[in-house]
Length: 443
Image (cartoon, rainbow, N blue to C red; front, side, top):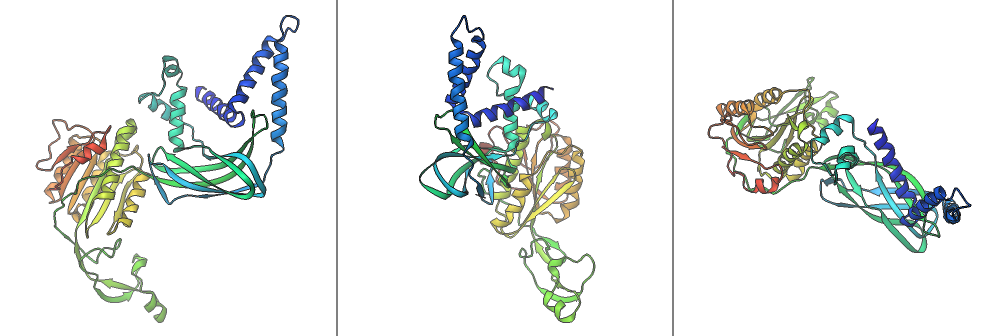
């Protein structure tokens, strides 16, 4: 019941902010107050104030009803954005009649209201309320969480046209509040009446999405071991990585062969599908393991872990090696990146949408990493906890000859024994400073 009341109060507040100017809110408040006190016209003259204020509101409402320009909006978004970094984009507003005078362009995101579970979890986190009454009711906390779920804030832009124009280009600015998809819903054109009390509104639905990547921080250059491992048949995911891409022969296509190996020219000439067989390769492959277990109870720590993993995915220099990202949501996920900065976008996009694992245990991640260990030369762990289960995974990888580095968001307990593997504690409140002092050797 309380959350439904919050939704109604929020929508009423947003409607009032859009349709009434500050002066209009003052006049409306005067009309309401004077209307209450002016019921007895024989004892007070407050009814005269009510009549004047009501007349002003009616005149203002009539003057804005006639403003109905047919508009079309094109939103020119960048390919991606980064959480916490303002991003500018362009809105192109076209109308079937010339636009003139001044108006306000308000680009809006899709509303997302917190669920009861999300609201209960927010109670345990930092409360934005400034007094005991607000903290007891919970409305400021609910509003702040709703803004975070929407994904960003967009300031309205005032436009003043000296000469009429049928096309207007507006520079807008989005401040992404979180990673993941941000969904735009509509664009409003707001124009004040001649008295400056009310605003007329024209709404253009303009659904669009923008992916927001996790924030990243500079890290020192890591030194990985030079050990390379044998990969039979070459690397299918990133064929330009490795010592050899020697072409051996062609053969008939068999079910399960990757499409990238089909020799399309030879297939067209022979009338049947044939594939290319490549030589065997030796190259290094590094793992980046993200712990997603326990983050549902501490959102700040989980977001800090994602930011640490994103920093490694973006800035680690692997030269000719592959970089594999492993984490678990509903199931184990593996994303691979090869040479060049462009390939890292695969990992950053995967990290942009990662969520805490709720239906699995850490053993699922451990099994996935150990199954992949035969391909890895080195591995960097980003752990939310530092317990015996995590220590066992590190030790089992060390016994298989995998060089490692552990970054943990929790101080290691007495049972966290990982031998010679370096362990570095990252402060969730200031991951940038913690990463600046991290070890530089993976061993």
